[in-house]
Image 1 (tube, rainbow, N blue to C red):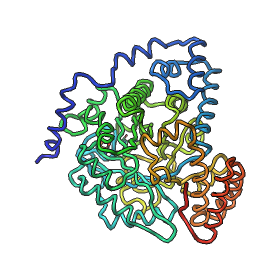
Image 2 (cartoon, helix red, strand yellow):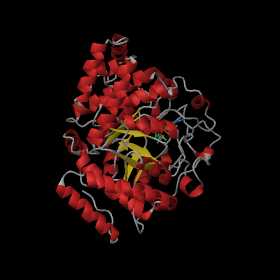
Image 3 (cartoon, protein in one colour):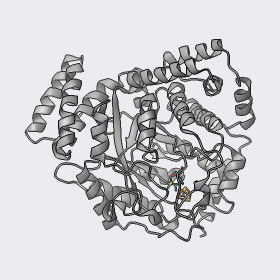
Image 4 (cartoon, rainbow, N blue to C red):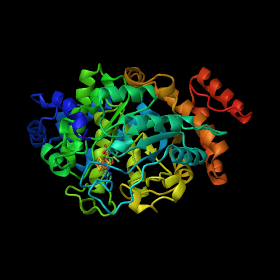
Length: 481
Ligand code: SAM
Ligand code: SF4
């Protein structure tokens, strides 16, 4: 059977729908209505955001269109405050593992697209995967996202086997404890199989919520050209029992203001349909240059650094309980500037060439990479830098304790996340310092551990952490709340 044919019947469900949850006219109407919001409207929205209530699209439009420097500064401060209140003062680290760059789609902005004949194609064998994971684990990684192209070679059997291989690698000091997945939209049956393999978050980025742009950049005749098959990928995942789903848009394909509204509409759609369970994470990658990919050199709607900063803060205020992921696509200076406004997860030490962990240092496999990384520093370096500002975390406890989906939302919304997150950050950071850190990072990190232990208010929690730290000194590992 032809690859596309395989999905024909599944597409029918969406072809039959009269409308979906992206109403373009309405989005533009809302953005136009608030073209020049007065101070009273901005005040109202900032006050609502301060109460940590999820904003409505019109309210997001007010923040997007606001040009008043004073209230923009206030918005940044509020975003910083909310991030600390909801997620605690910590940053979660992960690294991607690129599994295959073979792809039957032809997304014009992507180095993996089928018409890119310059790229060296490669799909990792199971032995390759084990080798990559061993290197990542020896660098101290505990969380990964597995990234796949869309091709018959990486079908669901292959994906499931690759996940099993990742979880099967157990080294002296550690292992990958959470494998998230970023792959093509799947059927419910396929998603049930992913759940059985114990995946963390299932991520699919819509790329653009603007239909005409979507059709133009994802040529007809490919699976990816089906806008709604992708738009409802997370619904199918939740139907199949995958609790944590991640949405995203690729910024630079269309007007950033429209895409931000699209992300909010997507969030609201999931919350309304799935009992308050919105996306676990939102990603907002900007297009980066890619090997022999002219479009990515000059994206039509390139987002400036200033607008990017606004975007992050606006997302933080609009969806206070959703994790925000900032990747190493961005340069270190951009990362430093936007992390305080609401980012909860970053990757570091990432190598995005297929086979990149074994083969090279970052950025040296351009003809095997999807795009060019902006931040090629090692995990150790980024963790060291983070020490001055917050506490690095490699925690995977919520997922392993079953605090996912609806349950996670309950925990997050009652603002108890930092009661779990900070203690677990301390413990995973301590593991990192003991087993993987350079002497400089260890020196920078120990006072951070002391500081955050001292700040734990609840006596029982504090005792648990102190005892766990003593057990770590005695050789135990992987203790969590
Ligand atoms: N192939 C699957 C898909 O397209 O959904 C999953 C993996 S794809 C490799 C992951 C994401 O990378 C895409 O969803 C897209 O948003 C992003 N991406 C593609 N080309 C990019 C570029 N030139 N710069 C930055 N991000 C890019
Ligand atoms: Fe393939 Fe994904 Fe790249 Fe599109 S973005 S060409 S689907 S790897």
